[in-house]
Image 1 (cartoon, rainbow, N blue to C red):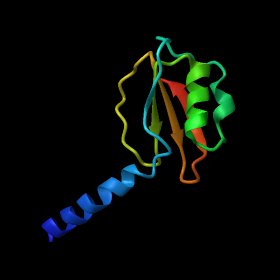
Image 2: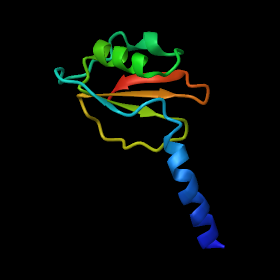
Image 3: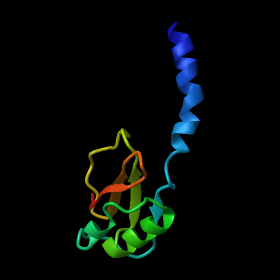
Image 4: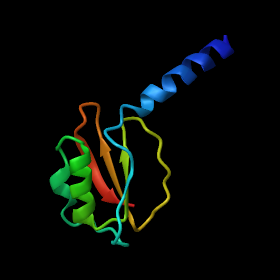
Length: 97
């Protein structure tokens, strides 16, 4: 029974990754992220274009997307922007860290 459940999870794993709107982005330049102006992204549809604009606004060097129910590390990185979205692909938070 356990092996059957494991096989099902392994089969579903690739599709779970495909639900994210895009992969983490890395920009050249900025080193310290700022939260100023990020509130305007809340409620907007998650997309690669929105991610690029949010990175530009925050001056973050890297960005990660937080899908609904996705586990993320709690480590704080001053150069990273984290954007989370809900099941409807609407941004629920955008913050440095």
